[in-house]
Length: 175
Length: 217
View 1 (cartoon, rainbow over the protein chains, first blue to last red):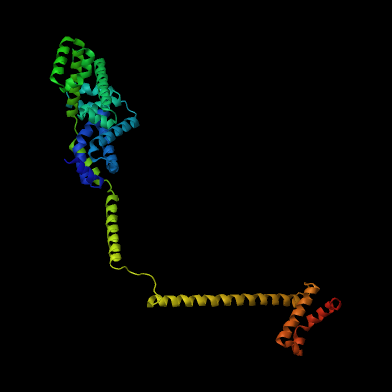
View 2: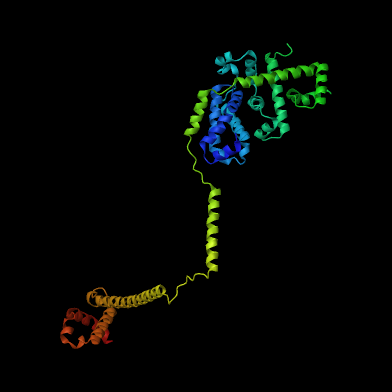
């Protein structure tokens, strides 16, 4: 996919080009939104909101090759808005995980519970790093911070997650 | 390698993104240090769990279709492409310059109004006619204004003389009669006894009575 070319077309109002871009990113974006918000409905709302904002503002994107960072930034902001708006503390037990638990093994459920207990800013970092498999450089670009800062924040988020899991007795390691 | 160094490089160690020498040092450290090994193993477990969890999440087909429909239903953008506008303007300017330079080198075109030119001449004649008409109208206007003033003055005096008997003072009436007599003298009607008689004898008589003592003085 020639991302720069498609972004250029989208800027000129080509909806099919924009649709192709979204098709390429939609799974990754949805996964990230899901990891941050913890449930399908909110994740899909965030994705729709992100797509709409991106469509309306794509002509403000200066560098066509920064679409990946730009749309992720919009998504994270949309997720934060939704989380703030609904004033939710996302615990996995309170959400639609009851229906979805059957699809995952015990390890998956554990990590979801632990993620739900983390603060949203740490969830965003872990979502970008491990749910979307972005590099530290990419995350630094999205969060508009130095690479070292992004790296230390992610390590801190991992440490917090580990503490949550240890506290909840969710880690299997060392048992 | 100490524990701090190990923790500093742990993320790269987990990713396997480091040189062999450092990797060996890291491995030898976790063999010796139980705390670091536990931390490493728990972190690897969490990272693997996160990645496994990520794989289990996907957008279902109906949602994908909905999203595509949503994009298709979005209003089209009416954008002004300034780059193309500037480009077109550049072309227009270039063509204009080309024509101007071409005309200049071809001897030029005199666009001034030549009196010898029939069109120019007709225009000048028309302008002259309009100017003289304007002048005539101005003169006429001045004459009419003077006439109007004169008539108004006369009217005023007559009014005082004949109708203002009860209102005007004696001097005004005297002035009015004198003026009227002058006028009559000018147009020759003063010689006509009939005109003198019919020129409101009653009011003149009245006035004469009233005026008499003062006029005599």
